[in-house]
Length: 327
Image 1 (spheres, helix red, strand yellow):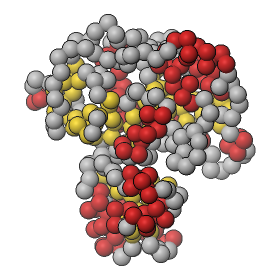
Image 2 (cartoon, one colour):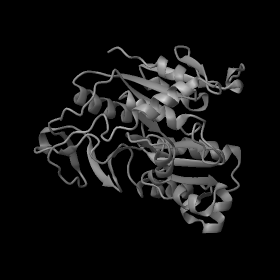
Image 3 (cartoon, one colour):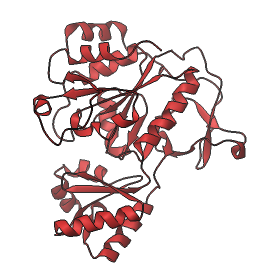
C-alpha cells in the first residue's frame, strides 16, 4: 500500500462506532424473530455505495493475505463505505480473518447460505406484528444476528446421505473423519481443519473413488432434489437453497432503509470468484493478475467490469478511486 493511503489511515484512526449503528432500546433476537428497525441516531453516516467483496483469494486459507488489505479496510471505514465480505468458509473459520483485518461489517458465508450481522450493526429488533411483515427471519448464532437463506443443518447432510445411498455413489463427509484424517484431507493444521467442518448450513464432502460419470450423475440427481453443489479443489459443499443473489437483495433492503435512499451495489472480486457475484451487482470491479490477463476459455464473462491489476503497488488507491461517490 502506498504511503499516502497508509498515512490517511493513521491520521484518521478507527471510528468507535460503525457507520450504520443505531442507538436505541435493545431486544434479544430469538429464532424466528423478524427484522424491525429502531429510530436511527446521528451516528448514521451517508454513503453512495455498498461494496460486496469476494475475499477468498485475497485472504487464502494458507499463506499471507494480499498486502495492504487491512489498510484498505481501514480506509473504507474512514470514508464510511460499508464492505460486505463474501466467503465459502464457515462463520467460525471466518472469525480470525475478520479480526486480523479489522472487518466490522456484515459478511455472507458458506457460498451464499446466510448473512451474518455483527451485534448491533443495524440495531435490529423483533417486529411487533410478525403477521404483517415479510422481512427475513433472524436467528442468533454466536456473536452474530444471522439471516438464513439456505436450510440449516442437518437438512443438507441428511439429503446428501440419502442421495449417496440412492445413486450408489460413495461420498465421505468431513464430519465423519477422525482429527488426523481431517487434517490430511483438508491440508490444514488440526485446529483450522476442525473449524472447517463446523458449519451452520452446508455440508463438506469428497467423492470416494467415484468415476467422472458417477460424479456427473450424482450432481445431476442432486440438482433434481434442490441440492446445490460448489467445488473447492477435491472438496465439495452442498446446501439446500443457498443464493448469493438473495443475500445481496436482503442486505440492500437493510442498507437502503437505513440510508433512506438506494446505495450502489458494487461487486469486487478476482476472476475465479467473479461469476458467483458480478451478475447480481450494479457495478463491478475485477481484480486481475498476470494469469487472468491471458486469453482463456475459463475466464468469466465480465465485459462491463472495470479491470484493475491486483499486484501493483497502488492497487488499493486505484480501487478507492474507482468506487462511485455520487448517489
